[in-house]
Image (cartoon, rainbow, N blue to C red; front, side, top):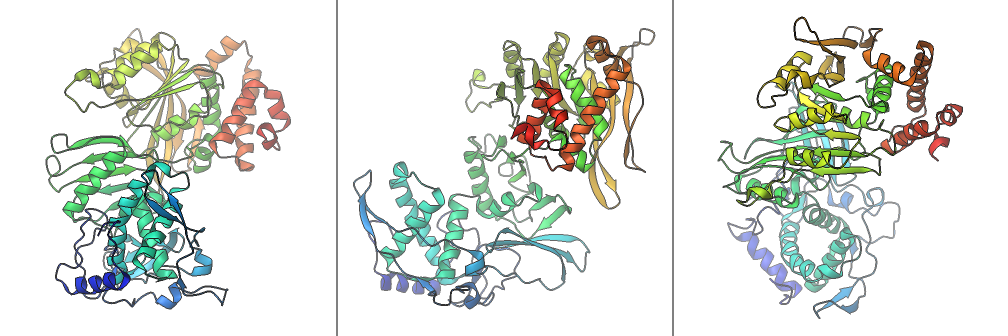
Length: 612
């Protein structure tokens, strides 16, 4: 049914009633929009996440529709929303569209929740929280048989009538949104609400509040969000989202519960469609001929994607490593126990004095987060160039060039720009600091050439300890000569470790490269800080080549050096005590200290004055 050939309300209702009687009633004509197959005759509200949940008739079994449509404290509110008076306006293409009044928005406190999940039999509730208040809720439950925690997502329940109407709205709304796209100047979610109201007016259908708000939720989720992944991407408690194939539950890495299984899975056709959508919205291309992709989602999250069964036998797979909008700061890493105040003061002085760093660790050990955090110590006017495969680094520096690689989608080799190309280009830009997301190929030699020519560089490398990191650097495919490795000043080794039943990120050791032993030809190293897991303490060894070098260059005595270290520790601890954690505020304190240390120390008890 197109926008230009509307049926009257009774005809639409008759069509829907006839459709319900058909065997193929609920097959979705729009691939990937509503991903459920034909539902059972009765589907309980606490099912395993088939989407959207449908019931057998216009009446919902759970939650009670009276509760969902409750007007809250205003007793005189109507249970339905009727069409508002409209004024016509002409679009760019010469067609007339109604201009509605400001629509009534959903208020969970006034209108009540649209979803009220029940704990399934055989499970015990561990924790519950809203992702979108009143609209999508997460239950962390423990399976009574396996004793494993599971992540269950619940969204609004739809009746069959609402489901059919939602499909029709989606088909017709696509036409309307395309026709008026160039004249949209307001919030996209409000545009969706207006277009939906226009179509309901065309259908001559009046809905209960609860039905209207549920339809709005699904239209907003699928047009502007990420379909069934949308609540997962918006859940701030999640770090990774993993799909291993069609028909397999989505797995998550939860900040509190670590690896956990969900009640969400995708059929093959829907999963393939979702994969293509993820690639397209990342500005990339994926196909059977090019079935693998690394990309960045619009919100900055990292995406690794495979399409079909060409390289992953269980079908299309993807992993989303969620982007933290506000990057971790040194203050937060100190709070979490990843680093001590002494270690961060060490990094602060080292970076300010142009020492090169390498963060080493396994997957998800926090290497890039630490690199980003300590990069906030970079002086405010220094020129910085960052080089990454997928954009992760975020700095509060104006003099910063953020560069990312580009994959070629043609047969022309020159269309591809890799990290080696970007690093060569960076060398011509006269940077003072070069940040490389991760070294794993031929760019390693260029990176160490940059170190040897006086450029301060920070990067990350996969490895379990210093010996493993040096071995990787000196062998294929990195092939960095040992005499070039000695230009590296500091190696920080990180890992995920257990503290009781909880897994936490810790800096295991901070090591200085102290040159090559002329007798053996081996690299000499000096352990500056070491982590003791029994006490959960980072201990300073009492000697540092970096500190000695700074004292020599600055002309400081041991007492002056100790005083400077102590001042920086005091600032870090004061920010922690005063709740200054966001990266913009933290960076401004560091920059203020770089410009006028005495002013910062004068306001040590109220550091907000430094940047307010």
